Image 1 (cartoon, one colour):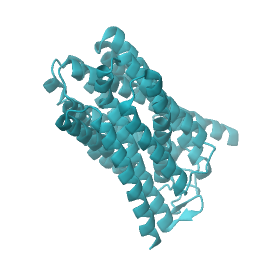
Image 2: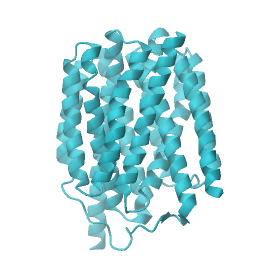
Image 3: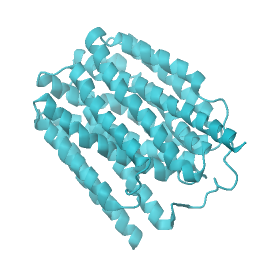
Image 4: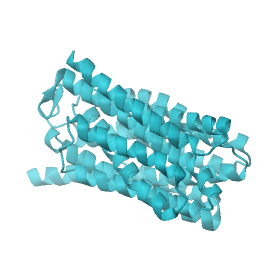
Length: 389
């Protein structure tokens, strides 16, 4: 009986993790094509920063609402609604013949993802027990990160060979099929072990809250930097003679490294409740993103992808693990985690693009990212010190 229950839970965790793989595969197929389609339609760096802001602004609001709502209604049904909205948005972008026609559709993409991610993340934690939480989250992270990496790789190649049309059709079709893969019902949390005990791994109270908030800050900045590479770097790549396929390979390497980091963190727990290792990884990420703005040789560019992927992986894993640690209100905390991530995606590429347009220098967004990472490290240390006083 015990092994049957374990198999059932593992099967559902696997299926939910598979939805993460397919969703991010579809999402980043689309986000590989959107910048190049926009460039072909005459987009400036400011416009390239504005496009993800349209999606991310909706995402920021929706994730907060969907996270709280998923603590009251079916998380899995909310995720299905998100799949349907995203698929519809892909088909509408396919029909867009100008930059202005893309603008009103991107909020629908953000709305769909906002209804999908916080509920599905909380559903992963619902399926298991506290002692298996980190392994379940690790499996889920490996799946969605693999999907993201593959989406960039396939998206870059498809765009280079066929243009954007097949990308939007494929992404929409896959998301509609995904609605059938999401499990139909939610398994009740295991008795006794899923109670909100206010702590995780023996850490409680102000220390736990401090590390949670520090991880939220680090993750928001890391994903804003990653999205800057997604939306701004294509234009710099074009300037130095590289195209969509090289761009897809570059982002594929970043997210392969993110996936490898997630695999490592399923068993390596030395990062938890320690500031210095996390600070060092963020600092190296900041140096890399500044240096890549000067790189002109593709092998050097690919080398810079390694610390970027590791930084993204560690920041995300810390943020989602601390967010889902206790049972009560985990949907709400997952919503905050995703909302702040979306805010980073919104503001950092947008401001970087505006600064690049004002300065007339395509390297400015990456210098801005370096400054933001430095400010984030200072902010995290302030949060820590305030928890001590």
